[in-house]
Length: 380
Image (cartoon, rainbow, N blue to C red):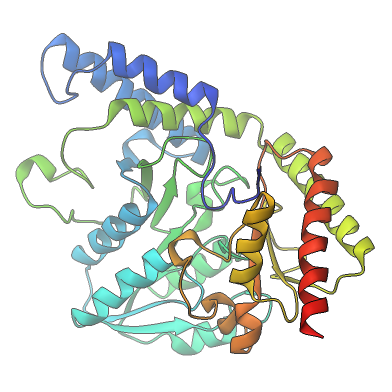
C-alpha cells in the first residue's frame, strides 16, 4: 500500500524510535524524584525542552509538554482565559479550525462565552474585513490555525496576530501542520500560545508541546501548588519527549530539502494527473500553502466512496482531518469556502511525506484513473 496520509500522522523515524527505546531502558526515573535516577530524567526533560525551543527560536522555560496538540490547545486556551486581566466573554475563531479547537469553543460557549467565527474566502484565507467587524470591546481571545489541515493554506498569522494584540486580544494558534514544514519563530508570529504535535513530524503519538509567550499571563487549569508553574502536572513521559525532541531536531535540520522534495512530488503528481484528462479542482490558496497537503475535488465523485475505492486499490488517502473521518456530514472546510453540500462531499485530501518517491506516482495515477473512469462510466 502507498501511504498518502501524512497530515493525519507520520511513521515514527528510526532516530526517534531509537531515542525512545534507549531512554525507556536507561532513564526510567521520575523526573520529580530527588535521587540520581530522578536527576538524570530531569536532565533529559530539560534537554528535550531546549531542543524543541531551539526549533522555535524560543526560551526553554516557555515550552510545556502535553499529550498532543488537542490537549495542548485545550490547556493553552483555558490557561490564557484563566488569567484574563480585563473583563469580557467574547471569543473568536475561524470556520475552518481543526475539530479539536471547535470542540473547545463549543464547550466554552456552554460555559457562558459568546463565540464568533471568522469567515474565509474560497481560498480558505481569513476575510480580514470580517475579522475587523467581528471584534468587540469585550473580545478577549482568538484561536486561529496557522496552516489549514485540509487545504494546506497558510494564514498571514504574524500580521493577524499583531492586529489582534494591538486590540488587547490574546491569540492562540494551532500550528500542527506548520511545525516542521515552514520556518516557525515563535515571537515573530505575534501570538500568545502555540500548540504543536510530535506525530506529525515523525515523532511518537501521544506527545506534543505548547509554547507560551514569556510576557503573557496564564494560570494553569489544574489546581495545587505543585502545578502552579506547569501547564500539565503529573509524571513526565521522558522517553516520549526525548523521541519528540530527536524527531524535531532531524526534521528541522533537513526542512528545506524535505519540502523541496515534497513540492517536486506534488508538482509531478498534478502534471501526470492532468495527462489523464480527468476533471478535478485543487482547493485552497494556489501560492500561500504548504506542499505536503493537497486538497482535491473530482466533480461527481463522492469523496468517501473514492477514499474507500483507493484503499481497496492500495492507496491510503483521506476525506479530510482524521478527527472528522467517517462523518456523513459534508466537509466543513469546503462548506466554509462557499461550496454546496454536494461539492463539499467530493473533497479528498492527499498528504505527502519524506518516504514518498517519484517512482510511486505512475502507480498512484494509474489506480486513481481506473477508479474515476469506472465511476464515470457507471454514472452515464
